[in-house]
Image (cartoon, rainbow, N blue to C red):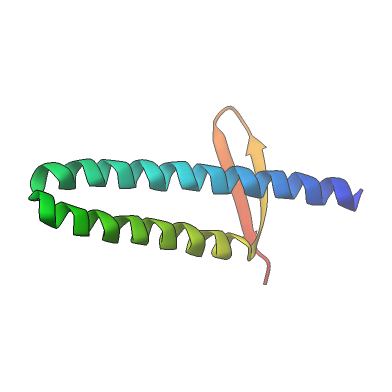
Length: 87
């Protein structure tokens, strides 16, 4: 039975990570679109590099943080993700 619970929890965690990645990536893409319009080309390339670095750091840090939680996805008509601190 524990294997089923662990597998279920891992699927829930994976779903949470995927949702986080989609949201952060969408925000980053929109930020880059705005920056491209607002910045001169030379400045944009440097800014783009910094934004992409922050984007990747943010996702890695959140995934590490999520590892500290037990995650269980519950479908109740709208998406709700429940998580509790392991400690």
